[in-house]
Length: 561
Image (tube, rainbow, N blue to C red):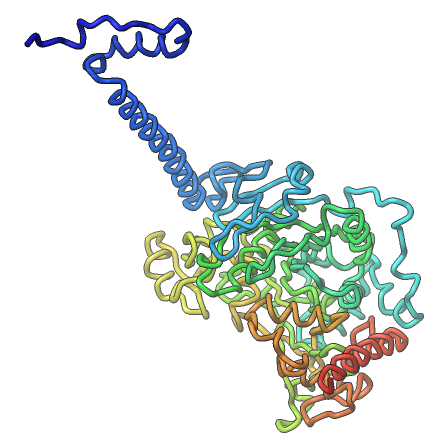
């Protein structure tokens, strides 16, 4: 038998072989390949193709992981802010252009307006991206959208709100300061009004509540920083209210004008890159992350260390008289050279539930112990030199937090709950420093409770107002309780809104004329000398109460069905 070597056999080519003929010629030149049968060659080629596909996919997977790690670890960016990702992008990243929920990527209306959002200044942080819109002093509002908020004011409201003269009435201001037990600047202190910078999140809040708080603040703030997101705090997707449509533009133009022509008003936008499994059930983390945008907006608008940062929810406000006091009085927490360990000044707050006619009695000296109702302690204010992005990190070294070290909640003993043991021994000691505190992120100004001074008027009157649950329908109320804050998964299943929360039960009972020793019987029964200016107008007060009565009436109808 003759042994035949495959390499010595000449193949017969098909006339119309084309690519096959060329492929055979190439294969014959590869060592060992020429010795294989056609079937063997086909199997080998398929294997090589599969191996190439796997290698190609692996390359992109590893690249994505490395890119994600780089973003999470941060890096040096503009202004030496170590908490920014390595690039301070003007465009939208893959993560920023989508919303993640429950580990799945959910595309929403973000993509529709992506090209317009791309034009906004953008900052990317490990937890998401901020897109900064223009402020009210940078836009031309169409004539059809222009309006004057003061046109609807009563004569009493005009009297209280026409107080923005540049001239300082020394005797009047001394009396004002004394009502809060503040001193008045002495000869060594500059006699000028401090600039106030405000920050609040905004979403589905009613026009009613925004009008109530903005009137109290009219022409007082230098900057109003409002931040919207396209998700709720438990990562439920929602549409942009102030971006991407004609209706959104109209609402934005309305918002620009509410706070007065002297105030720079902006709405900025936050898109989180977090998934539900990443927030570990702590839905307030998304709120904490979203509030970080205020520091950047304040910095863009020229905030200085001697200015005042105020953090609130949009349905909360200091009283106008107290805001004026914060501008001029000798407030110990606002003197220069603060340690920033306990820098807050915060309100003693009167809480209204759903209607100006439904209020909790305060826990101040205005009431005996049996008749004291509920306490609230926001908004909160700190000196600019203690605020993130504004103060000096050389004087106030960074502390450690539970997300990427510089985001989220302060670690125990690193300043959380006013306990600084590890901050002293592991941060300050290495720098030969003592007694100093870190700069405060916006959410810390709010949630690190009781680290400063809570102020009540000397007569026991409140220094702030909270217009709680001033929504326009039962649907809005249910959506809030089901998706924001400590979300109640059973909120949508309750037979009536009164069963969702004790606050709503109080508001429903008030509408039915059922009051307790801890609730006011009406707006007029509120003790003390502080009243929200918006609801000094009886027509506005009655209109809101009538609307709340209608909401309760319709909700009650479901109980008897």
